[in-house]
Image (cartoon, rainbow, N blue to C red):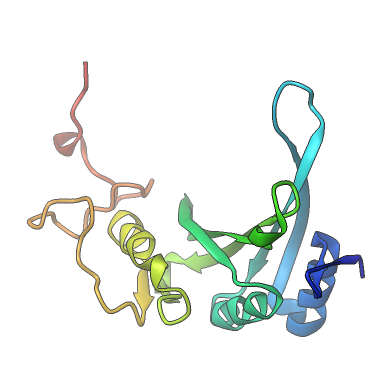
Length: 182
């Protein structure tokens, strides 16, 4: 397992984290992908990004495990309507204190069937997820179990909550709700 020491703390590289999670979570985690990225015009690889999928019932356990490595600095939850599923992407960074080019972006994907649009909220672990989870709820219809405030963030209070702006199915806004901007 690749690692280095920073201020007396073991810092695992992306491959090491993937191996650790696979050994702890087995088939509950899958689709590990380590992507190189570059900044600037040189094209030089300046970092790596770990992506993987976790089953929704193991999401909280997984975030707890990331917390054993380092505090998972939360960025945002994004999502996509993929037909029968809504896929959520939880974007984190590990090892922010290590320095630029050494911190590790981590994206945790959770595939949620439209027949049961619920997922555990991360609010009890990371209160800063509140607005992202509320946004995902109002735009995709995903219920975050355990999220204390489920009020709308962007849509007006009188919005019909059966209309889900970021979905690509029959729940998406109709032409009567879409305005052309000049």
